[in-house]
Image (tube, rainbow, N blue to C red; front, side, top):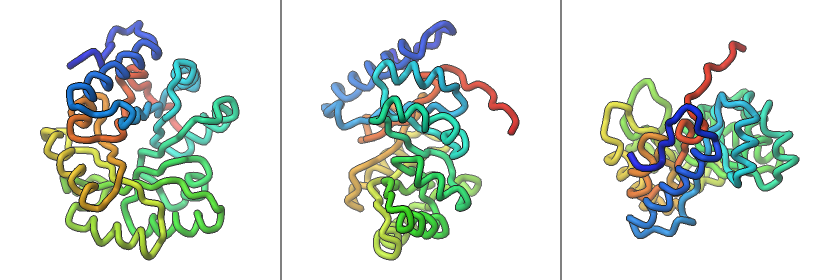
Length: 235
């Protein structure tokens, strides 16, 4: 791995963030890509507000959270101080959390089923707030994992655009842990291209450099920035 991993226990969030930024710049240069075309989503799930504040102070503005309730507890006060903060939901969304999600997030990356799409459309119409939506694709067709199977993407995307009028701007995937991610990244990028979708969210701490080579516009990096994830307290 490159300088993206600053794994010494005493490394600060700022130092780790700078290492990841350097790695993104190097990856873009190697692939002939504009560094401005790759957005770093700092995944702050289970990490304390203080860690997010340090990243904000270091200039990071785009963050990803897995759970609506955790984001609701952490980000409204931070957004008052940093109004240009952009928040992405990158975890599964239950329909009973849609109202809070639409109010809180700027991007919802995990639209994956008709029931959720319909609930999002209703809440967007009610509230007037329209966060960008990415469709999660289950590129590995893993039965235990969320996401639309690749063969069903065209029909689901057409319904999201036509039936529900959702602001779909891209696709997202999480490759199987035991497979080479490159083939999944190539598949997702190709599907986005064919669908005319400009955003491709793929790549995490262990493989974001590969994702950049295959055209990722958003990489979701947590551990390489914030360190090992603390065990969340029981609710």
